[in-house]
Image (tube, rainbow over all chains, first blue to last red; front, side):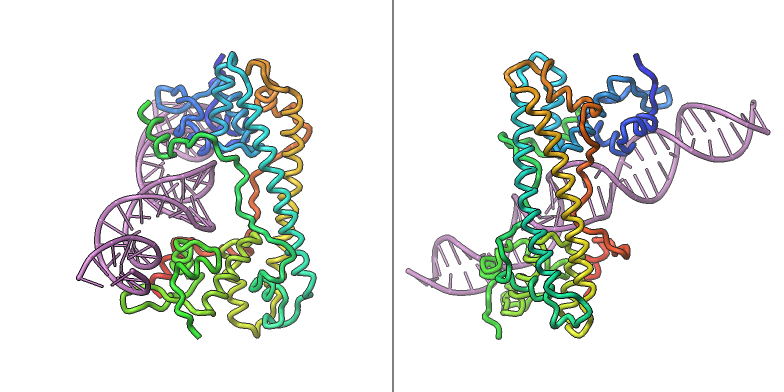
Length: 168
Length: 168
DNA sequence: TTGACAACCTCAAGCGGCTTGAGGTTCAAG
DNA sequence: CTTGAACCTCAAGCCGCTTGAGGTTGTCAA
């Protein structure tokens, strides 16, 4: 089964950095790896697949906590997959919100920048003035919601997770 | 000039949290505030305007470091405003990139979620399988560039800034 | 067998941009 | 004069890693 992949080889295959793999082990996303006598990690196909799954889900914008849930599903394939759909749907909705927001911001910024073509002094610069006065804006805008969906159940703190992972 | 605004009143007027205002003072975005005899902060119109400027620029997605540059321009209105335009243009470009990425992600996720309508077991769930296998994806996707533009000159570390602000 | 050297190891701290909390002090109204 | 909301400082926490120091292992050629 095991190919005896080193952590570096695994990193190359999955395009996940070495330090990140160790981090995933620390927080319990990846299992504790087998070790050589000298203490170096060695991985097999199952670990590679799991890491690829994580990588892909991260690329799609899922939070680490979301991924914990998705991995639990994958680990126990007899449970219903409604959770996976709910997470996916929330993620799509969050992405849509974010796209709409960004479109508004882009319009605002473009309008501001176009209204003053540079080369003049800051005192007369429309960019500066527009930033100083939100009243000039065509829309309300607030850029800072996050993409990740908020979990229905308040999750354990990160410190708690790291600690739990260390105990286990 | 000074209305003698308390930090709480300023927070309400600008929609910036009290703790955030103190943080901005710590990192030197806001000047050290005047204090009452008892040591409480009091603000005037100039500070309110500056904070509104910061708030607005943050809403538009500018990083704190970008804002430092924009504020310096505002503080010295005889300098040319090319920097402001460059920052604005970079920000627009970054937003466009981000929107394109998110559109790809959304398409991918929607396709995945639609291909399996829930209610079944995780073993057969397309969402789970699609996450496990990037080969099923219609596009490459990597969600994790940031919106903020990278500065041309490597900036001082954050710690250094906080320390410098404390010395001053 | 040995020596070089890349790749590995752990542990601690850093990044942005705030937020939260503990534990204490000030201020304005009644 | 007393209440109590609002203020103060300082430290630590949040996410999801990344970086760095300082030391050890594994592999290859000479």
